[in-house]
Length: 249
Image (cartoon, rainbow, N blue to C red):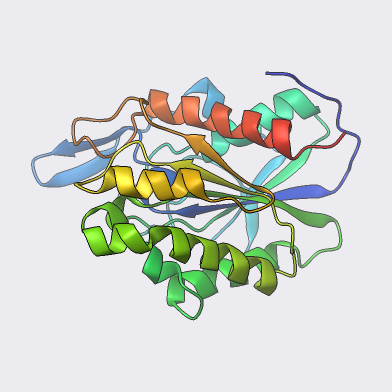
């Protein structure tokens, strides 16, 4: 990964949104009907005082795995790509970099549930705006990993491209950031119509919107969720994409 010096002192804010693979299921195990996180935090996901997360109660606090524990609260959360992403940026941009992560992902959600006016969308906007309530904070990008739920039936898959483009348009308007960088992840897993959703994701052609392809990353036994190691790889991929396309020294 090519690294550049970072001179800015503002806290750089990244919104993490989508469904379960963004919320993180790495290290989540099943014991009969019970699911639990194994508690293993790889070095790439280690906490650092310069990395904060916005809690469900809109308070800044030290960021730790699982990042989405109080956001995707109805599910068992584990390792996702967010902490790896943040640590990768710090290694490249310098120890003086201050980062704020805004977890918003909720497992099992379809893109229509993220439409403007729906609860998930409105919460995401509220959390994003709250994250820059201080003068020294700046939203730098949205990381978006979602679509598995839209691969279940053909109608949802066919509508995905327009729904995602509409989401991007509305979010930029509501955050007053007309050029907000967005890094979406093309699906690594899904149901019958996964290729139709992937095709839509890869075909979106909007300025400052890029796609990172997760296809081929290792899946857990459920053939749906990324393993911890795959989440580490994805975090690095997202960081590289941000540095390549959106970081200006």
